[in-house]
Image (cartoon, rainbow, N blue to C red; front, side, top):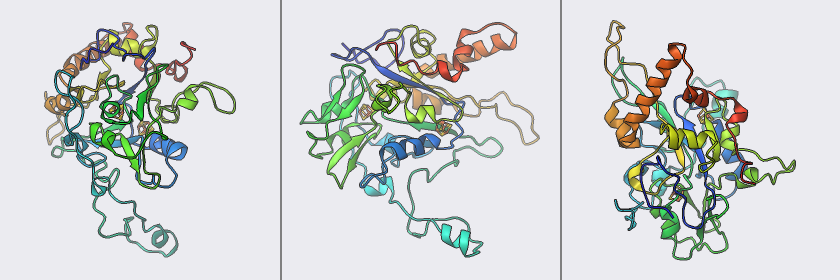
Length: 351
Ligand code: SF4
Ligand code: SF4
């Protein structure tokens, strides 16, 4: 049974009644913000009516307000002891932003030299609105990309929030799903999820969310092959690993539980996410004349806000292992982080 810890390390903590737990590790040092994952997800799952604004996978620029806007300030999740749910807000339409058309026609066919822009002059927010803005002052400004999906949490506040038990964790792999027949569209799950990864479909009047591409990982496609999630398989730099947290021989278990370099986003929400991140490194700050300074470019305090105190040990471990490689020594950790595509997906071990 889950003990509602926030650290993600040391022990494998499965939810009650769950036999195995799917998990994903994303290496933030490799994300180029291309949004291929977003499009892969959208074309697979959310291109239908009522889903225009839904991004089960989104990639946001950090520091930044994200999607929906300021989701990190909206509450949800659990109290520090993990026993009580904390209240959360329902994002408004403005927090998501309305879909708009761009002036493609003008630029492509009418010879206009206008910049590409939304046709709706009132548009002031939407997915990726603040892309690449980041923070800091030239020449030491900084940003990094943060890809996000539902975390298929071990202690999911969305599940607890639903009075009809329409949300549930599958026993075979811990994927969190919405039973569309049971759902009545109350949206308590949307309020309850601190990551704002449940969306309301106003046309169908039900909640919908990331399904961890379960038909793909079950091998129920036309060729019967077991595959990783679409967001992972289509990622050009292959920065996502997909497997089971409790597969002790797998790379995810090693990165999360042994080396403790793959860490949770906002562990203080206490939902115990099963999506983990290798934290971002950045070049040091430098002076106007281009000299390197002994100062980190991404403020450590900001990274601690995002990933909690475990970030410090994670960054230290990765730095130490990188130095080993520079000295010509072997490092299992660096080999894991730079493994080949076929080693990144281990989904058949529990069949
Ligand atoms: Fe539920 Fe949100 Fe956790 Fe996904 S991220 S399982 S929607 S609480
Ligand atoms: Fe980042 Fe990969 Fe998504 Fe591109 S496809 S935005 S590199 S996670």
